[in-house]
Amino acid sequence: MLLFITFSLIFLFFTLAVCNFFATDQLLRLEFKKHRSEWEKDGRPYGYFWYPKGTAFWSGGLARGSVLYKWHKETPEWIKSDLRAVKLLYLYRWSLRLSLFLWLIIVIYMITFYRVEK
Image (tube, rainbow, N blue to C red; front, side):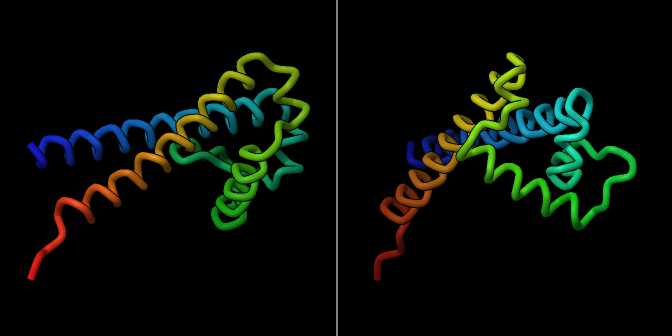
């Protein structure tokens, strides 16, 4: 039973992580296609599975991290004006929060039920 619960929690965690990656890629792609000037101001970030031509590997990756941190805390004006972007930002934020919470539950669960007793 413990093994089933463990694998179920891990499967749910990875499902939420993929959902978060999907929302991130879609948001960045939407910013690239419809709000190019904002995308360039953000440092030309690329997604996890989406990589536009002309994007620098190191600076684009760093830009993605800073943009995602910023988007977690505040909503840019270009997102407020686009209903699809608002929905994707909501999905991004909640999948991130739930996956981090689930990660914490998995760690506590593993420490509690799988510790080696001497």
